[in-house]
Structure formats: C-alpha cells, structure tokens
Length: 426
Image (cartoon, rainbow, N blue to C red; front, side):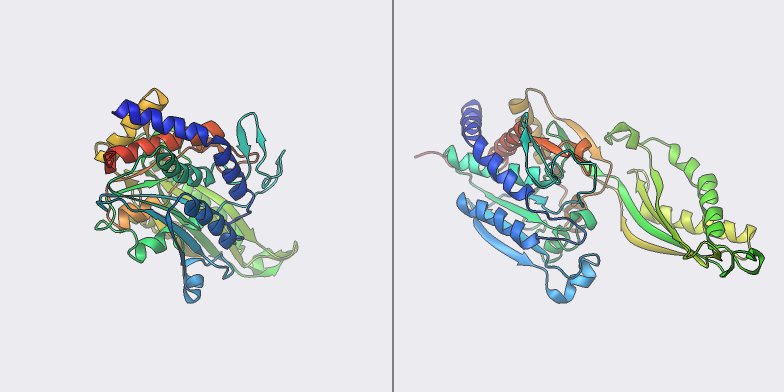
C-alpha cells in the first residue's frame, strides 16, 4: 500500500511541475523585501489564491494597526498579514501545521539576473527569496495539491500558513499566530517549518541569537585638541579588545550537535556595524557598534549577557572614564528537539522512499520561526524541513532547483499520509 501511495503521489507531483514553477515565479516576482516589509498583502493574496484553487479554506490574519510599532519596529507601519489554509479531514485530528515565511531580505547588489525576475535557467529558479524561503511555501502547498490530485484523502487536518517578518525576528508573523493561540500544543500535534535547510536534511533546531548594540560615551572636542575631549571610538576599541581577550577564547568549544555548515559548530560573536563621528576635525562623543552573537545549544542567553556585563566592568576598572550602554534588540535561546519522535521518523521514512537515502539530521546556524513553536507554544514535535539550499540564503544570484521543490513536496505528502492516516477508498 505504501508503495502504491508513493507512486500515486509521485505521478501527481510530476504532472504539476509546470504549475509549481509558474506559482513559484509568481511569488518570487513580488518584492517582499524586509525591512521594511513591502508588498505583503499582494504576496499573501497570491498564496491564498493558490490555496483556494486547490480547495483549502483560507483565512487572512492581520496584525492590528496599534501593535505594528511594537511587533514590527522596522516596518514603517506597513501591514503585516499572514495567510492560513486548512484541509480538514473527517476525523479532524491529528493536525499537522506547515508554515513558511514569504518575506525576503533586501535584494542588495551583485546580481547577474534581475533579483525579482523569477528567471528559470538550467532547472533553477533565480530570485531573491527563491531559496529563503518562498521555495518552502511552494512545496508545502503543492504537497497538498499532489495528494488531492492523486485522490488521497487524509483522516486528520492539514494547515498551511505563510507568514511575514521572519527576517526581522518573526514577531509579527508566526510569533503573532502563536500569541493568538492559532498554534498551541492543544490544537496542533505536528509542526513543520519549511525553511531552506536542504531537501536531504531534517533540521532539529537552531543556534541561539543575541542582536545587541554597545554605545560608548565620550566628550566632544576639536580635533586639534583631543586632550580636551574623550574619544568614543577609542572607548569602543577598548571594549572590542576586551571582548577579544575575555569572550572569544570561550567560544572555541565545538558543539556536539550537527550544526550545518560545520564551521558554525562554534559560537560566533561578530561586530557588524560601527557608527561614530560627524566631522573629520571633531572628536566624537558617541560610538555605536552593532553585534550578532550566535550561541550553540550548550550555551544560553543569560550566560552571554552576563559575560558582556562582566567585560564592560573590566574595561571600567582599567579606564575609569569608560562609559557604555548595552541595548539588546533581540534575544533567542537555542532550540533543540528530540530526534526520535513520530514526526521525525515519518520524514526519515518518506525521505528515504522519495530521495533514495534517509535524510541526515542538522541544526540551523541561524534562528528561525521554530523558536515560537517549541519555546512558546510548547510543541516538541516540530522540525524544520524545506527544499531551499541553505548555502543560497541571502546571497546574490540566489536560486532554488525546481526538482528540489518537487521532491520536498513528495516527502511532505508521504509524511502526511503516515502521520494523519488515509481515508479508505469506497
């Protein structure tokens, strides 16, 4: 029976290749760059229209205007809308929820192809967000489409959501759905985040993240008389030197978990932006440095923040005129789920049946929306599985192989059969 179902799903998916490609091109051509979050309603509508086309019940969920500044501070008060589709089986449960984000990072420069052309070349679809992660949105919808076209009805319920703002934390996207009780451990048995973690990998979690700024204070003076002032850039240099001396050696330990790529199996603390000064002959009285700290599962946010405060105190001891402020913009503890749950086993089996080998386990180098489902909704059976190549995320000339979207959709469809059960044919 499983072999027969696999063949029916595969045949149905193969017949949908052209339609899948056209839909992927359609949503990649919508420039949902975040920040600030452009064209969200247009993209949500296009996704909702496809879900309606295949017979799903569709609902649009919009963040109230009065909460936009809180949940999307970089969003210029532009609308934040999630689209939710349901396919309810006769037994209604169990419920599996597939979810992916449709926002993309700004296109940037260095493209050979128009970043929003959706150009197809040699079996690859190019464009910003093609891999990260509109590819996952496409696969999760076409997995359902393939089941329907193959005439396979499921006993339980499938939910497919597409959300905004993951690239800036996800608080107005999947975070809002969890906050509103749309995803809870009472109403959702399984959850699959369709991020771009590779078609042949099952991702069990992600590193933690702290985005923060350090602001060093100085005293402005004329550049010809620097002794009359306190240079905030020099103060920042002292802080950076102390970070190198005190914190960086602690980050050399490698995680025992399969974080991909392997170079990310250590914690990384990176200064990413520095702003100071307003004129070449003026000693600056403020310097702002932005940092991206990624934590392996063996570490946590509380420890990291204490280390930063300790370093600031040490610099103050050596330089009594040192004044600095720490501003945390986002903090997310590492997430890790067990590797032996029914949802993991279902995707392992389906992956082996479709791809010819059992998908390997991985842990994401960056954080993603899994944090909301696992840490806030309390759903342990939540994995990340999607077709996009991880190495294409945020790059110029980003692409996704069309074949990977199709194969991922087959894996998702076969996993649904295993987890939700099939209604017997009359």
